[in-house]
Length: 180
Image (cartoon, rainbow, N blue to C red):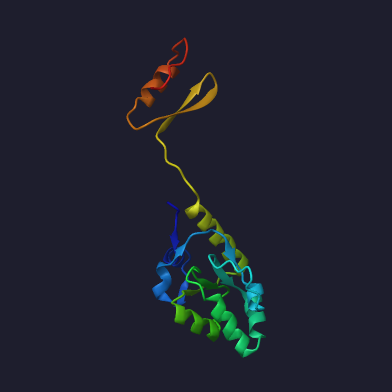
């Protein structure tokens, strides 16, 4: 089963301010990659990775502010169009464009804000998401040093792994026993 992080987990972990879209705080984040949609602010959405957390920093918002009003509305509508997009985060405590608020409210998309600088935020978020979304495997086992070589003895719970480890490490001679 793939691991997931909820947007609400980011809010709690990074003390993010929820600007709008509280209904969407239950959205899942399924990838650790983040995205800064600079090309999308210029109108290019051809390969937009909508499954990623979107971060808007000073560069993206400064460019966006210089666009004509009708383009601004259209671009924010497209940025917020997919329910697959977990959230949009505004860094540096910048003002949230009204076009983003309108588009996000229509789609119940969380818009979050933080005073943290964009690159520092991206680094911290990436580390957090990689840790929480990393694949993991749980196995029953015991580690043994056999003649200077490390071995992992695995098997079902209560199958005698530790007992065999004790007999091997106590200096028993002859061939190593095999697991049933």
